[in-house]
Image 1 (cartoon, one colour):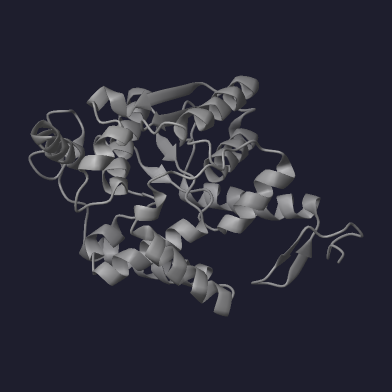
Image 2 (image 1 turned 180 degrees about the vertical axis):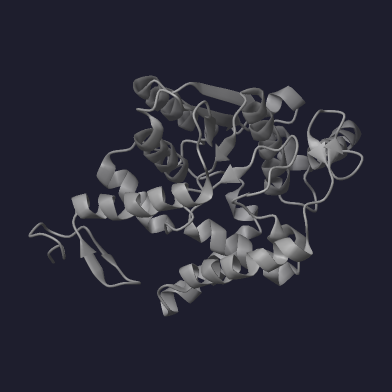
Length: 306
Protein backbone atom coordinates (compact mmCIF):
# COMPACT_ATOMS: atom_id res chain seq x y z
CA UNK A 1 0.00 0.00 0.00
CA UNK A 2 1.59 3.25 -1.17
CA UNK A 3 1.07 6.83 -0.04
CA UNK A 4 -1.35 8.84 -2.18
CA UNK A 5 1.21 11.67 -2.44
CA UNK A 6 4.49 9.82 -3.05
CA UNK A 7 5.95 6.39 -3.66
CA UNK A 8 6.68 5.71 0.03
CA UNK A 9 4.89 2.96 1.89
CA UNK A 10 1.76 4.15 3.66
CA UNK A 11 1.64 3.94 7.45
CA UNK A 12 -2.12 4.43 7.71
CA UNK A 13 -5.46 4.47 5.93
CA UNK A 14 -7.71 7.35 6.98
CA UNK A 15 -11.05 5.54 6.94
CA UNK A 16 -13.27 8.62 6.94
CA UNK A 17 -11.75 10.01 3.73
CA UNK A 18 -9.98 7.00 2.17
CA UNK A 19 -6.49 8.57 2.15
CA UNK A 20 -3.35 6.42 2.30
CA UNK A 21 -0.48 8.36 3.88
CA UNK A 22 3.20 7.71 4.55
CA UNK A 23 4.80 8.93 7.77
CA UNK A 24 5.92 12.28 6.37
CA UNK A 25 2.60 13.13 4.76
CA UNK A 26 0.66 11.88 7.78
CA UNK A 27 2.61 14.25 10.05
CA UNK A 28 1.91 17.11 7.65
CA UNK A 29 -1.77 16.10 7.48
CA UNK A 30 -2.14 16.26 11.27
CA UNK A 31 -0.12 19.42 11.79
CA UNK A 32 -2.01 21.33 9.12
CA UNK A 33 -5.32 20.70 10.89
CA UNK A 34 -3.92 21.42 14.35
CA UNK A 35 -2.38 24.71 13.22
CA UNK A 36 -5.68 25.68 11.61
CA UNK A 37 -7.44 25.03 14.94
CA UNK A 38 -4.88 27.11 16.82
CA UNK A 39 -5.45 30.07 14.48
CA UNK A 40 -9.20 29.59 14.74
CA UNK A 41 -9.37 29.32 18.52
CA UNK A 42 -6.89 31.87 19.85
CA UNK A 43 -5.47 35.27 18.95
CA UNK A 44 -1.89 35.30 20.20
CA UNK A 45 -0.32 38.69 20.80
CA UNK A 46 3.19 39.81 21.63
CA UNK A 47 3.91 39.27 25.31
CA UNK A 48 1.39 36.45 25.76
CA UNK A 49 2.05 33.39 27.89
CA UNK A 50 0.47 30.11 26.77
CA UNK A 51 0.18 27.40 29.41
CA UNK A 52 -0.18 23.77 28.38
CA UNK A 53 -1.77 21.11 30.58
CA UNK A 54 0.63 18.17 30.27
CA UNK A 55 0.04 14.80 31.90
CA UNK A 56 2.71 12.94 29.94
CA UNK A 57 0.15 10.96 27.95
CA UNK A 58 0.14 10.92 24.15
CA UNK A 59 -2.40 13.71 23.61
CA UNK A 60 -0.88 16.25 25.96
CA UNK A 61 2.65 15.49 24.71
CA UNK A 62 1.54 15.90 21.09
CA UNK A 63 -0.15 19.18 22.03
CA UNK A 64 2.99 20.47 23.75
CA UNK A 65 5.20 19.34 20.86
CA UNK A 66 3.11 21.07 18.18
CA UNK A 67 2.66 24.27 20.21
CA UNK A 68 6.42 24.36 20.72
CA UNK A 69 6.85 23.92 16.96
CA UNK A 70 4.49 26.83 16.32
CA UNK A 71 5.56 29.26 19.06
CA UNK A 72 8.96 27.97 20.21
CA UNK A 73 10.92 30.33 17.94
CA UNK A 74 8.91 33.39 18.90
CA UNK A 75 10.80 35.47 21.45
CA UNK A 76 7.68 37.51 22.24
CA UNK A 77 5.51 34.52 23.25
CA UNK A 78 6.16 32.34 26.30
CA UNK A 79 5.20 28.66 26.46
CA UNK A 80 5.08 26.71 29.72
CA UNK A 81 3.91 23.28 30.84
CA UNK A 82 1.76 22.56 33.90
CA UNK A 83 1.41 19.04 35.28
CA UNK A 84 -0.69 17.75 38.15
CA UNK A 85 0.43 15.03 40.55
CA UNK A 86 -2.80 13.42 41.74
CA UNK A 87 -1.03 11.11 44.16
CA UNK A 88 -1.52 7.84 42.27
CA UNK A 89 1.41 5.57 43.06
CA UNK A 90 3.01 3.81 40.09
CA UNK A 91 0.94 5.77 37.56
CA UNK A 92 1.75 9.47 37.79
CA UNK A 93 5.48 9.48 38.76
CA UNK A 94 6.70 7.87 35.48
CA UNK A 95 4.66 10.29 33.35
CA UNK A 96 5.99 13.31 35.25
CA UNK A 97 9.53 12.13 34.57
CA UNK A 98 8.77 12.10 30.83
CA UNK A 99 7.36 15.64 30.97
CA UNK A 100 10.34 16.98 32.92
CA UNK A 101 12.88 15.48 30.51
CA UNK A 102 11.00 16.64 27.41
CA UNK A 103 10.70 20.18 28.76
CA UNK A 104 14.35 20.21 29.82
CA UNK A 105 15.46 19.24 26.31
CA UNK A 106 13.22 21.86 24.70
CA UNK A 107 13.91 24.63 27.20
CA UNK A 108 10.24 24.84 28.19
CA UNK A 109 9.54 25.96 31.78
CA UNK A 110 7.54 23.27 33.59
CA UNK A 111 5.57 23.35 36.82
CA UNK A 112 4.04 20.60 38.93
CA UNK A 113 1.14 21.07 41.33
CA UNK A 114 0.04 18.32 43.68
CA UNK A 115 -3.16 17.12 45.30
CA UNK A 116 -1.08 16.88 48.47
CA UNK A 117 -1.48 20.67 48.72
CA UNK A 118 -5.11 19.94 49.59
CA UNK A 119 -4.40 16.76 51.54
CA UNK A 120 -6.39 14.85 48.93
CA UNK A 121 -4.04 12.35 47.28
CA UNK A 122 -6.20 10.11 45.09
CA UNK A 123 -4.89 6.84 46.48
CA UNK A 124 -6.23 7.97 49.84
CA UNK A 125 -9.36 9.79 48.67
CA UNK A 126 -10.55 7.07 46.27
CA UNK A 127 -11.71 4.78 49.08
CA UNK A 128 -14.01 7.55 50.35
CA UNK A 129 -15.57 8.47 46.99
CA UNK A 130 -18.67 6.30 47.72
CA UNK A 131 -21.51 7.05 45.25
CA UNK A 132 -19.23 9.02 42.92
CA UNK A 133 -16.32 7.55 41.00
CA UNK A 134 -12.83 8.76 41.98
CA UNK A 135 -12.72 10.48 38.57
CA UNK A 136 -15.41 12.94 39.72
CA UNK A 137 -13.15 14.30 42.44
CA UNK A 138 -9.95 13.98 40.45
CA UNK A 139 -11.26 16.03 37.52
CA UNK A 140 -12.49 18.87 39.73
CA UNK A 141 -9.26 19.05 41.77
CA UNK A 142 -7.09 18.93 38.63
CA UNK A 143 -8.99 21.77 36.98
CA UNK A 144 -8.70 23.88 40.13
CA UNK A 145 -4.93 23.47 40.43
CA UNK A 146 -4.40 23.87 36.69
CA UNK A 147 -6.35 27.12 36.56
CA UNK A 148 -4.66 28.41 39.72
CA UNK A 149 -1.17 27.77 38.32
CA UNK A 150 -1.99 29.21 34.89
CA UNK A 151 -3.39 32.32 36.55
CA UNK A 152 -0.30 32.64 38.76
CA UNK A 153 1.89 32.49 35.65
CA UNK A 154 -0.12 35.23 33.97
CA UNK A 155 -1.15 32.91 31.13
CA UNK A 156 -3.58 34.28 28.61
CA UNK A 157 -4.60 30.82 27.41
CA UNK A 158 -4.49 27.26 28.73
CA UNK A 159 -4.17 24.49 26.14
CA UNK A 160 -5.40 20.98 26.89
CA UNK A 161 -4.90 17.73 24.98
CA UNK A 162 -8.58 16.97 24.36
CA UNK A 163 -8.85 15.11 21.06
CA UNK A 164 -11.83 14.49 18.77
CA UNK A 165 -12.89 11.39 20.71
CA UNK A 166 -12.87 13.34 23.99
CA UNK A 167 -14.97 16.12 22.48
CA UNK A 168 -17.54 13.75 20.94
CA UNK A 169 -17.85 11.86 24.24
CA UNK A 170 -18.35 15.05 26.25
CA UNK A 171 -21.00 16.30 23.84
CA UNK A 172 -22.89 13.00 23.97
CA UNK A 173 -22.67 12.85 27.78
CA UNK A 174 -24.21 16.28 28.18
CA UNK A 175 -26.92 15.64 25.60
CA UNK A 176 -27.96 12.40 27.29
CA UNK A 177 -27.93 14.03 30.73
CA UNK A 178 -29.88 17.02 29.43
CA UNK A 179 -27.21 19.27 30.90
CA UNK A 180 -27.57 22.16 28.47
CA UNK A 181 -25.70 24.63 30.67
CA UNK A 182 -22.63 22.41 30.85
CA UNK A 183 -22.91 21.85 27.10
CA UNK A 184 -22.82 25.61 26.56
CA UNK A 185 -19.66 25.87 28.69
CA UNK A 186 -17.60 23.33 26.75
CA UNK A 187 -14.33 24.68 25.39
CA UNK A 188 -12.75 26.18 23.51
CA UNK A 189 -13.70 29.26 25.52
CA UNK A 190 -14.19 32.50 23.66
CA UNK A 191 -15.46 34.68 26.52
CA UNK A 192 -13.07 35.42 29.36
CA UNK A 193 -14.53 35.02 32.84
CA UNK A 194 -12.70 36.86 35.65
CA UNK A 195 -10.28 34.48 37.35
CA UNK A 196 -10.68 31.71 34.76
CA UNK A 197 -7.96 31.19 32.17
CA UNK A 198 -9.75 30.36 28.89
CA UNK A 199 -8.98 26.86 27.64
CA UNK A 200 -8.45 25.85 24.03
CA UNK A 201 -8.10 22.46 22.39
CA UNK A 202 -5.63 22.22 19.48
CA UNK A 203 -6.40 18.51 18.93
CA UNK A 204 -10.19 18.77 18.89
CA UNK A 205 -10.29 17.72 15.21
CA UNK A 206 -7.74 14.91 15.64
CA UNK A 207 -9.07 11.39 16.36
CA UNK A 208 -7.38 9.59 19.24
CA UNK A 209 -5.86 6.96 16.94
CA UNK A 210 -4.26 9.69 14.82
CA UNK A 211 -2.85 11.38 17.91
CA UNK A 212 -1.27 8.08 18.95
CA UNK A 213 0.15 7.42 15.49
CA UNK A 214 1.49 10.98 15.24
CA UNK A 215 3.34 10.56 18.54
CA UNK A 216 4.83 7.26 17.39
CA UNK A 217 5.85 8.42 13.91
CA UNK A 218 7.28 11.69 15.27
CA UNK A 219 9.21 9.96 18.04
CA UNK A 220 7.48 11.91 20.81
CA UNK A 221 7.91 10.20 24.21
CA UNK A 222 4.74 9.54 26.19
CA UNK A 223 3.46 7.46 29.09
CA UNK A 224 0.91 4.82 28.12
CA UNK A 225 0.10 3.51 31.59
CA UNK A 226 -3.55 3.14 32.57
CA UNK A 227 -4.93 4.87 35.65
CA UNK A 228 -6.02 2.25 38.23
CA UNK A 229 -9.34 4.12 38.64
CA UNK A 230 -10.04 4.27 34.90
CA UNK A 231 -12.60 1.46 34.88
CA UNK A 232 -14.90 3.35 37.26
CA UNK A 233 -15.30 6.40 35.00
CA UNK A 234 -18.80 7.07 33.66
CA UNK A 235 -17.21 8.38 30.48
CA UNK A 236 -16.35 4.80 29.46
CA UNK A 237 -19.99 4.14 28.55
CA UNK A 238 -20.00 7.06 26.16
CA UNK A 239 -16.59 6.12 24.79
CA UNK A 240 -17.99 2.72 23.80
CA UNK A 241 -21.13 4.29 22.32
CA UNK A 242 -19.22 6.81 20.19
CA UNK A 243 -16.70 4.17 19.07
CA UNK A 244 -19.52 1.87 17.88
CA UNK A 245 -21.05 4.73 15.91
CA UNK A 246 -17.67 5.49 14.31
CA UNK A 247 -17.09 1.83 13.48
CA UNK A 248 -20.42 1.62 11.65
CA UNK A 249 -20.21 5.04 10.02
CA UNK A 250 -16.66 6.45 9.69
CA UNK A 251 -16.74 10.19 10.29
CA UNK A 252 -19.44 10.05 12.99
CA UNK A 253 -17.18 11.72 15.56
CA UNK A 254 -16.60 14.64 13.20
CA UNK A 255 -20.37 14.88 12.63
CA UNK A 256 -21.07 15.02 16.37
CA UNK A 257 -18.55 17.82 16.81
CA UNK A 258 -19.78 19.71 13.74
CA UNK A 259 -23.38 19.52 14.99
CA UNK A 260 -22.32 20.91 18.35
CA UNK A 261 -20.35 23.73 16.72
CA UNK A 262 -23.46 24.67 14.74
CA UNK A 263 -25.55 24.75 17.92
CA UNK A 264 -23.03 26.50 20.16
CA UNK A 265 -23.81 30.10 19.04
CA UNK A 266 -27.49 29.53 19.88
CA UNK A 267 -26.58 28.02 23.25
CA UNK A 268 -24.35 31.00 24.00
CA UNK A 269 -27.17 33.39 23.11
CA UNK A 270 -29.73 31.73 25.38
CA UNK A 271 -27.36 30.73 28.20
CA UNK A 272 -25.01 33.68 28.74
CA UNK A 273 -22.03 33.34 31.10
CA UNK A 274 -23.18 33.56 34.71
CA UNK A 275 -21.82 36.15 37.09
CA UNK A 276 -19.02 34.75 39.22
CA UNK A 277 -17.25 35.76 42.42
CA UNK A 278 -14.22 34.47 44.27
CA UNK A 279 -14.40 31.47 46.59
CA UNK A 280 -12.48 31.74 49.88
CA UNK A 281 -9.70 29.73 48.17
CA UNK A 282 -9.46 32.31 45.38
CA UNK A 283 -11.09 30.29 42.61
CA UNK A 284 -14.07 31.75 40.71
CA UNK A 285 -17.43 30.23 41.62
CA UNK A 286 -21.16 30.66 41.09
CA UNK A 287 -22.12 29.61 44.63
CA UNK A 288 -20.73 30.26 48.07
CA UNK A 289 -17.85 27.84 47.49
CA UNK A 290 -16.19 26.43 44.40
CA UNK A 291 -16.81 22.80 43.47
CA UNK A 292 -13.32 21.78 44.57
CA UNK A 293 -13.84 23.15 48.06
CA UNK A 294 -17.26 21.50 48.28
CA UNK A 295 -15.92 18.09 47.30
CA UNK A 296 -12.89 18.49 49.53
CA UNK A 297 -15.18 19.19 52.47
CA UNK A 298 -17.23 16.06 51.69
CA UNK A 299 -14.13 13.88 51.57
CA UNK A 300 -12.67 15.37 54.76
CA UNK A 301 -15.86 14.56 56.67
CA UNK A 302 -15.86 11.00 55.38
CA UNK A 303 -12.19 10.60 56.29
CA UNK A 304 -12.86 11.86 59.80
CA UNK A 305 -15.57 9.21 60.21
CA UNK A 306 -13.11 6.63 58.94
